[in-house]
Amino acid sequence: MSFLTHLECSRCGKRHEAGLPHNLCSCGGPLLVRYDLERARREFPRSAVASGPNTMWRYSGVLPAKSPVSLGEGMTPMIHARRLGAKYSTDSLYVKDEGLNPTGSFKARGLSCALSMMRELGTKKLAIPSAGNAASAAAAYAAAAGIEAHIFMPKDVPLANYAECVTFGAKVTMVDGLISDCGKIVAERGPKEGWFDVSTLKEPYRIEGKKTMGYEIAEQFGWTLPDAIFYPTGGGVGLIGMWKAFEEMEIMGWLPKGGPRPKMIAVQAAGCAPIVRAFEKGEKQSEFWQGAATIAAGLRVPKALGDFLVLDYVRASNGTCVSVTDEELRAAIDELGAAEGIFAAPEGAACVTAYAKLRASGFLKATDKVVLFNTGAGLKYLDMMTFPGRG
Image (cartoon, rainbow, N blue to C red):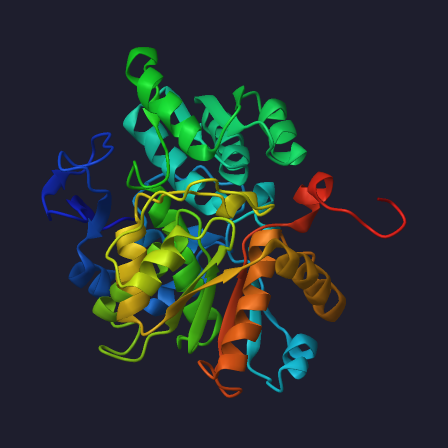
């Protein structure tokens, strides 16, 4: 059951027909999936969710695919971080642990949805540039869907990502450069090779899988929302998707119309913080970040296609943007692990430091209910870390 009606450009508003493969709008804007939410309000009540599968596909009425390609993604735990919270004199701190998804990261959500639609629309080959975790997920779901996958990754990505892609039968090319360099190769070779480009926001369906994080937050908090959400922001699709989810839930009556929404807090690495810089300058979009460098591979995105949407939603929510050094996020991996038993990816650990900074500045209060997103499993980054006694 899906109430999909059409696609809409996020820049110019142009309507695009559903049921056809799409990349960007002719104006260059990312496309957003639209549904008949008034019909969904009548035929897909909030009470129906509980009888759905224990995956993100429980929200099938507001997802586009008729027949999901699923490996069990979504419905990750919302962990009440009591011991970590005690350090900051709060009992209102939570961690949404996306590291328990298939292939160990939140990327499983987006690629499950994208590959479901690719199979539905008859696409035979895909190509994706990735800093690591999206590659793993694309390879896994392509294997499950029977679609040929061509993966382009920087050659210094975590070993686990490379190993997964090879194991899942993908055709892997390691690139001496950044994700932006990988993207150029996909754009140049894709048309003649017959690859469908599933780069971040260059197709409309990855965002639909990512938005389910917003639905889950609401459901796990008894159909209420927290006061703030910290989100590690490379491409920023998860943040964009969650804001879309909040809007959809309001229209369907799952959340109070015009009710308070969380402050959306974009967290980036100090060595690659184009969105933080644009936010601080009051700009509507970011500039390409020269010399991007950080151990948080998922945050090493010099220029996000959807940066203008991230900045819009951060500002609309009265949120903010924060950068964290590699030294700080390394310490935060240990802090979160020792306090809560969560082995976070560097990207997720960055949210712990960002939270500490915003509490110290007074931006957030001890009474604020806050969700920190750990977007991946720390076990995938072992070759990029050092440990006492082992080097």
